[in-house]
Image 1: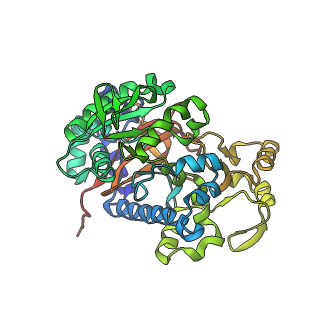
Image 2: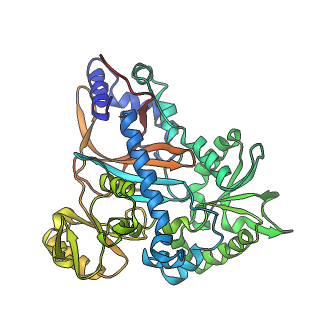
Length: 450
């Protein structure tokens, strides 16, 4: 049963004597206060059919494999050259290529809108620095309400335990054999430790029964002695990285990261995920996939998956570009089609520097375009997402615009995290400001009716 049918049946059941939105929120709010939801859950879960979830997950894996193949296909295996091409400085590229793993990580979060053509990819986040890995806390909490539990059971729904998938991915990519219990410390920069401490403590307790002895701390708490990295009295096998390449612009942070990278290069500790994940997370890599000049290095299967998922996306390079099979001047095209385009920096995160043309006055848009042209920026065609209805008070529903995050991990699909803003207008969705979130239940099997 597809997404819209499952949603319709849930809303009909709510209207026919089901719980109010406030009742659902009250059941789960405290459970997700210390989580990626930040205590702002929506009033219902969302739903996906098995076939549509599998199709998007397969396409996501194909698109990611194409991205990680680009350094070999376009740059002769020179990862640093690829990093510079997707927006990194030479210094950032040199750091990001240190202490690399044998292969790029499979820890990936995609951010998508759902429009009339299907799920459409806005960006990929690669590596251990993105949010949303503890999304299944809301699945667990919301199932305590009998109405939701009954609906999930009657419709053959389930969810993926992202924290369990994360644990498997950590152990697999850090090359620990089955049965070995590694010691891991999740490490952030000192300035962010106070904010992250409650979540890292909570998540460490969840990872413990999954086979990882886990702690949380910051870079300044690590020490190096006797050929090991130490956190307090604990010799560390894995450092779970929660800092970005952007943090290394701070000389004090770089001074703390340097001995850790050196220790990893000596084989004294594994960094999960290595710094090269930040290269693949650049939005510039998506622009390369979409760019007509690179289509010859893609397989038929890759082009098909990219066509289904990725809107028209191009780096901001002066000169002609192909739009709908027609050659146009890129800058002029941007200026005359403002309301259907969005500007994005290749490397920044959390919505920083993003300029939606439909929310920007023409004069300001022109300024932004001229300033960004030939820099580390890209332009993407606007997605017009469906608004989803959520219970809001007695006998009332309200529209929300969703960002669907499909997670990819070592087993394949790794869970779902949904963020939303009120209303039917697409804008930057940021959980650190005012966005809300919810969880997703997926069909366990495809049902046949007859």
